[in-house]
Amino acid sequence: MADSLALFGGAPARTTPFNVEPMVDGAEEEMVLRAVREKNFSRYIGSVMPNMEDVLRMPSAEAASLSEYWHFLGGENVRQFSAGFAAKMGAKYAIPINAATTGISVALAAARVGPGDEVIVPAISYTATGSAVLLFNSIPVFVDVEPDTFCIDPKKVEEAITPRTKAILPVHLTGNVANMDALNDIADRHGLVVIEDAAQAPGAKWRDRMVGTIGKAGVFSLQQSKNIMTGEGGMIVTDDPELARRARLIINHGEVVFEPDDDPSDMENIIGCNFRMPELCAAVGRAQLEKLDTVNDWRSRNADILREELSGLPGIDLPPSQRHGNGPAEDVPHLFVALHNAEAMGCSRAVFVAALRAEGIPVGTGYLRTMYANPTFLNRVAYGAKGCPWTCNGGGSPDWPVYEAGMCPVAESLLEEKFLWFYHIAHPSTEQDMRDIGRAVKKVVAERANLAGLTQADLGALAKKSQGRIGT
Image (cartoon, rainbow, N blue to C red; front, side, top):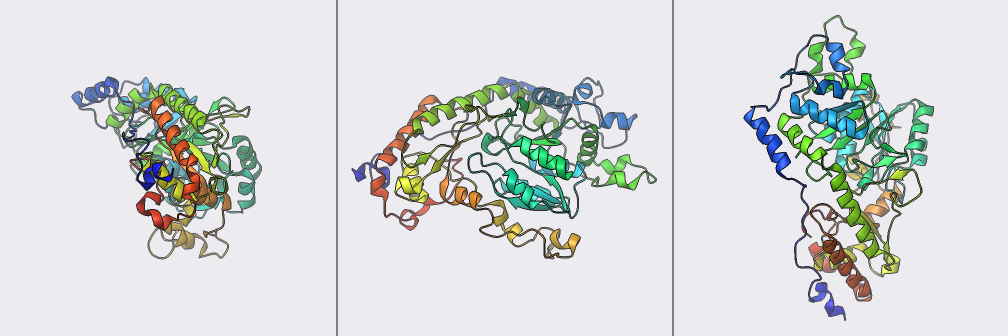
């Protein structure tokens, strides 16, 4: 009966709120309290040290063994966290930073991507991926994604390369892994650098290598919503000593290291910035790093239960799991993604989402728009009012990349019609929570005929697009 649906006045399938919060225990508290007792809040030196070039190229493990209380590479917690993260990812260098957004900017700048250079970016990601390209006056070029992984489509990357292209910025979206073999092959053939945005995929793998270590550099997010966190923060990883050297200069007022007669080309993109991670954040990170495998297993287990619950339901399509396939990728779910099939469901995604939210399930619809649909890009307004960096480097060249509706149809279809995002696979969600989601979805699917004919206008706020991370 239609009136069994909460949307029409029936009892909701779930009345208990869902909760997502970091896995935190006494370890984080002890690390932070120790830093506070030692008055250890920031131990960076923003000036030249003896053997400076050796310091800048020092592997993270070696830096952690130093006894200096103050250091260009940070204090004890920053250097210990860096070493632990590098070891976990199998990288030589890990560079803590204040946010993954600036981490992407710094990694590109350290690779000498600068004004007027084009960076190829997938159409779907949080807006920071695209805006990070702008920081050093580079130009993002957005291309479509693959329909099953939601990651950048290598075929579209190849088509987008111009003489101005300098870098490829794949995003391992929702914990899925981009096709790194194809992307590295393209980069090698065209002389490009690959910087991985691994914000949502710490611990995911490509051919037994951790994501973030497969390109020239990788960037991780440590914001509170991520698999492990420092509140706010990020990490750049690389095996390239020159990129590590330049990144360390960029994040810590690097221009003070140079002498007036040093090679000006070596100063490229190195200006008086402070993108450093504080000691208290690093103290939290040291404790969180020990939990990475546990929280990844937690998300993976819940994702598998949810896949079992939703499998075979009409109107719900489930993308393949990279962990359970025979391919080179092994994802680590940041969230669980299902796809709405309007034809099989008999109603639009907006109507289905409204019905599911009424049942007490905070399902999301993905990001609100493609990155190129954000006003910054549509209006080409970033620095000042005259269109910089688009106009300040090429004089408003008519062949600058286009940002307009319809340019990435797969991405637009996913965001406008198909994505169903379930964030609540994360800690402390339980198996029973997953069963409740499954029960609610099955209830709505069973009554889908009663949803036919409803429009988004009929449903008000319940049908609005939302990431669905908090509440309904």
